[in-house]
Amino acid sequence: MRGWWLPVLAALVACSNDNGPGPGAPPEAPSTLASVSLDGAVALTWSDNPFQSDPGLFQNYRVYSTSYDLDNDRCGSDWLLEGTTVAPEFVVGALTNGIPRCFTVTAFSVDGVESDRSPTRPDTPRPDARNVVLYTVQDRAEQSGFRFWDDLNGDGDVQNAELGIVRSGNSGTVDFFVDRDVNGDLFLNPVRAGTGVEYADPDNPVEDLTSIDFAPDQTYRTSGIQAVPGFGYVVEMDGLDGFKRYGAVRVTHVGQTFLILDWAFQTDPGNPELMIR
Image (cartoon, rainbow, N blue to C red; front, side, top):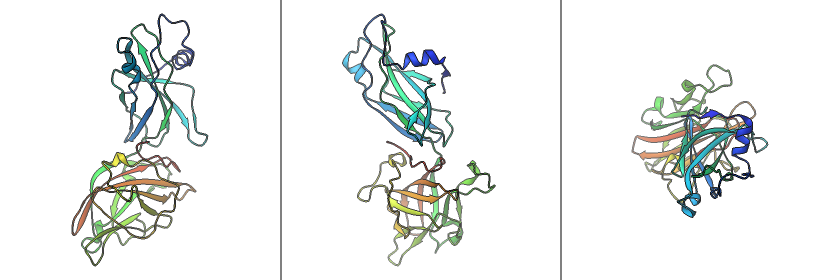
């Protein structure tokens, strides 16, 4: 659940590097902060050193967020208190997909003194879905193609009905289709101009869809890539507006006639943030 807007002065004091002459010693600040992009939410985890260094002084953590300027890599100044927790983890919910946010965490003492803030962490929530079945084009062509986002009404905004579309693999409008070669192996074949795909890790499977982290600035293959159970894939697409779009896929099952996959799509134009950083 979202927190509330604090007065600017109070927020700046809360996140200031100068704690003032409070009634006691401040706890240590969390030394690290990591995030996982979710659908309409961001999961945060951080180092528990404020508690571990002095359990008797520690009371809880405070989680803050503000706007984030992706183009200039800059956090805003109007900090929102998202909530408090005694554990070194917190899920910030009720966020808008495709809108970047910047996060930080402080520790609060039993004496009512707040620490310096942790390192800041930008993240952008994005939609996802699990257990999508795609058939091979040889067995059921009408359910062999996949499109992450198709701007059906032409308004430039992403609506839920425009996401995760399964259609014919023979259509030139899909991002990729599932093909089977002469050996019986299944492949993800890019289709649309400007669409390419690469392994998230060419040597190892990924534990979950959320393990796929960042869309690297690299050359993505436009030929087929083998679908392997447990492996993750990053897909680069042309947004048809001068910006790239990025999606993530994790294949969970590969059979003879179909495969099952999980997918995520970053709705923020040009934003390569997919999952965990």
